[in-house]
Structure formats: structure tokens, C-alpha cells
Image (cartoon, rainbow, N blue to C red; front, top):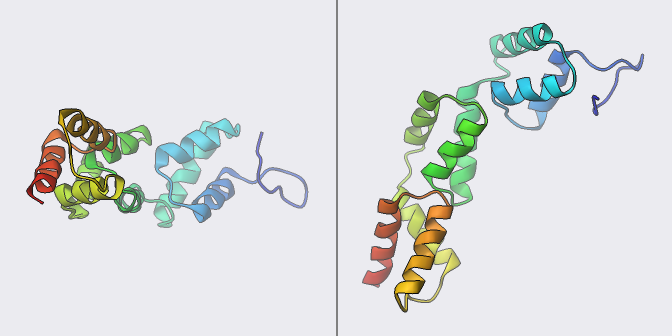
Length: 157
């Protein structure tokens, strides 16, 4: 089932080599690596050993993965709720997520306002338009408080 490069003898790479190949492309959480290796029919023992070796060598770190992921998603204009949900889906612990979001030191209200301005250039005309913009910000992962603050800032202009 392996779809990457095979060795000269035609054998699939070891779990460690496969994981290094994955990490060369982008950061992965431990859960993502385990899942990808399991889908490629590596034995659980081999997967565990490979992950442990990667962590000891400093090639895999959930903390680093979290930091990179959070920065990436902030750059895309996503809010903390969506980022949190996506990281949980990738098997990252709640404690690491909270630390990464706090370390990002982002003004979520200002980001929500910026995202809103990028999407909507015209002022709010009625209650339906206000509700539409609130739904948009909610779909981007901003809390109600952050969304209302962004709309209030728009109303002030």
C-alpha cells in the first residue's frame, strides 16, 4: 500500500524512513504520523519505535507542530475555535493547544475585524446582513464576543 519511493531492492522503507519522508514535507503530529504509518501497514511496534526515535532526534515535536499550525491558520484568517477544533482532530492535547494559542499572542478581535473587511467592503445595511456577517465569522472560528466586537468596530466607521 506504500505509495512513496522504494529502496533499490524494491522493498518499502522502514517506518522511521517513511516518517522522516513525511516530516520533510511538513510538520505532523504524533497521531497523524501513527495514522499514516498504520494505513501503510507498518506494525504497531515498528510505528512506536519510529515515533520515539523521531522525538529523541528532535525531528518530531507536537509543540512545534502546534506552533506552526496556529501561525498558518492565523495567516489564513481563522479564529481560535476553528484552530482548536482542527488541532484536536489531529490528536493534539488540549494543554498544547491552549499554550500554542496563547503563545501566538494574537488580537482575535482585530483579526476578526480584518477578515470581515476583506470579505465585505460595504457597510451593514440591515439585520439580515448583520446576521450573515456573524455567521461568516462563526464559520471562520471566531467566538460570538469576537464577532460582535468586529461588527461594533465596523458600525463605528
